Image 1 (tube, rainbow, N blue to C red):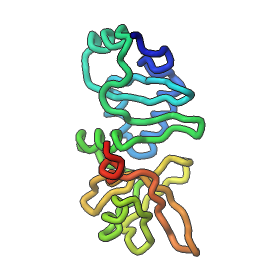
Image 2 (image 1 turned 180 degrees about the horizontal axis):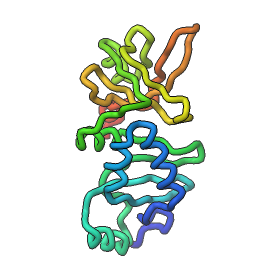
Image 3 (image 1 turned 90 degrees about the vertical axis):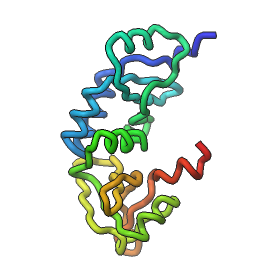
Image 4 (image 1 turned 180 degrees about the vertical axis):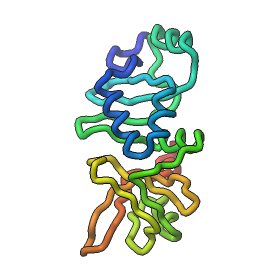
Amino acid sequence: MPAKEEARLAPCSRAVLSELTGLLNCYSPEMRKAILSRRLLCSERRGKATMYSFSGDARTVDQLLRTEDIRAVGVAIAVKTSRGLAPTLGLLSLATSLHISPLNHYVVVREPGATLFLYGRDVFEESVEELRADPSCGTAPLIVLDEERLPLGLGAVARRRSQLLIRNVLDAGWYLRSGV
């Protein structure tokens, strides 16, 4: 049975690619260059678009686009909803495998805050070693790194009783907690 038309993979629109370029620029020009040089496809379903990155030649792309029942390929790097574009844990994993660290819009977290963050907890000011939040990045989440500069997940700057707080948006521990 063919897949529903709404879930079919297709080249990403210019608007989505432009938004993805802006998001990647928040973190690092090197990240933008590396990710955008890979093959990118989008799958739209119920008003939500998921962007996938994979390495492969043009024949692979053509073959995938002709296949009716393919719904995902490679690594999901971002999701676009009515609230905007959000990076995924797949983007962080891909950037790490390409040996790319963010140069901007990140926070480095000391122990025990890093471990607590992986358990879904927020990070308090005393665990923040370095914060490089760029206001021009708008609502893009910060990349949360441990002291070895390995990505733990995504966070958002907040204040709690006048103290800095990094809200947990998504963390790598989610994989274990969700059973995926």
